[in-house]
Amino acid sequence: MKERPTIQRSASIKAAKAFMHAHDPDPNHALHVCRNSLALFDAFQDLHGLGKHERFLLEAAALMHDTGYANRPMQHHKGSRDLILASGLEGFSSRELAMVACIARYHRKGDPKPSHSEYKELGKDDQETVTKLAAILRVGDGLDRTHSGLTGLLRVEQTHSLAILYVQQNISSGIDVDTAKGKATLFERVYDLKLEVRSEG
Image 1 (cartoon, rainbow, N blue to C red):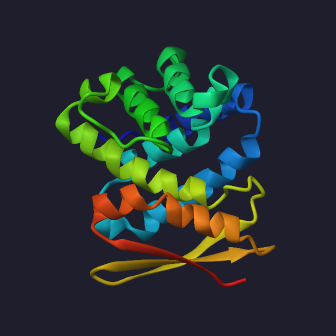
Image 2 (cartoon, one colour):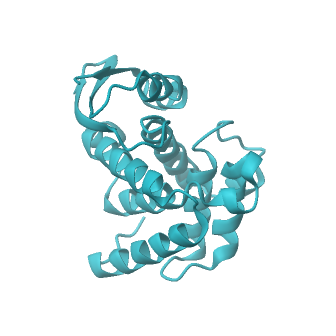
Image 3 (cartoon, rainbow, N blue to C red):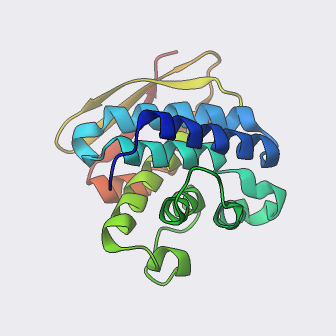
């Protein structure tokens, strides 16, 4: 996918943040999930091989992943998808919005499937990108299951079959660690790596 100038990305992210603040009842959680998700993206750069534009899509999806609480609280992942698709958000092409909406939709619940209408409308390469980024977002979201902002990624150690996420916690939270592990299934399948999460206090 064609890279866009930094100034354009910045304007688009500003629009995504404004959308987040308008619709997400807990924007601080979204901001923390975004930080952890981007840290994961950067740490696994050699693994996923994606570039600045895909990082931008992940950032936008992470910021807006919980906006669906405004219209579909019991299925907020689908609500987020629907809101993003209908937003006409300034600075995003229709293709980018479709990808961001799908990434946000898959931050929880079912994995991407060819039978899912919005997902199947994407090209094959875009589907692959969405799946890779959704896998990262799920783990980033899991690291803040408590919505406390207390768990942050420190570093990653990786072998050919295992990735260990070392996280720092201001207050120990087994919930965040356990949820990140529990949401790692898609990541493990997509990247063919077993994922462990360890707290360093």
